[in-house]
Length: 164
Image (cartoon, rainbow, N blue to C red; front, top):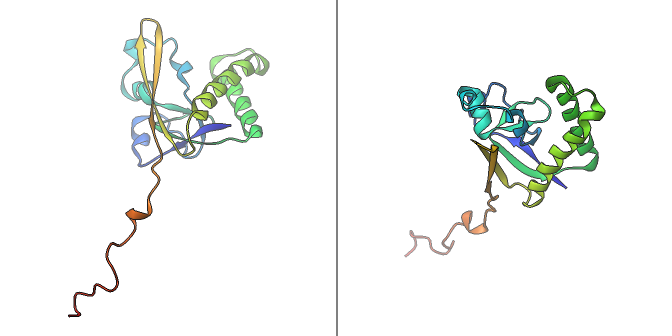
C-alpha cells in the first residue's frame, strides 16, 4: 500500500499557503475543504490552497508537491483517526465514529491514486470550480533514475595529452 508525503524543493510553500504542511508528513487531496466554495473565495493564500494544495494529515497545512511512498497498515489507521478527529474538531462531525467512515474513504482515495505509481513519483493537484462542484486533476512527475553515463568520465587514462 502506498500514500504520499509532503516534499519541498524550496521555501515557496511558506509564502503561498496560510499554513504550510511539514516536510515528510502524510498527505491527501483534502478537496473536501472547498466543497461549498464560490469563485469569490478563490483568492490570495486561500485561493492557492484551493488551486494546488495537498492537505497534510498532521499539521493540516498545505503543500504543492507530494512524493509517493510505502505506507504501513498500522500507519494508515493512525492517519484515519487523525483525520476523523479533524472532522470533529473543525467540521463539527458529531463523533469520531460518525467521522471515521468519511476519513477512511478520503485516505483510501489517496491510496488508490498512489498505488498506480512507483515510489518517489511526484504528484501535483490542480482544482477548478465548475457548475458541478470542485474538479481535481493530477499531474504525475516520474522519478528520474540517474544512469551511470551521467557520472562517467569519457576518455581514457591512456590519453594523456602531454605524452607524445
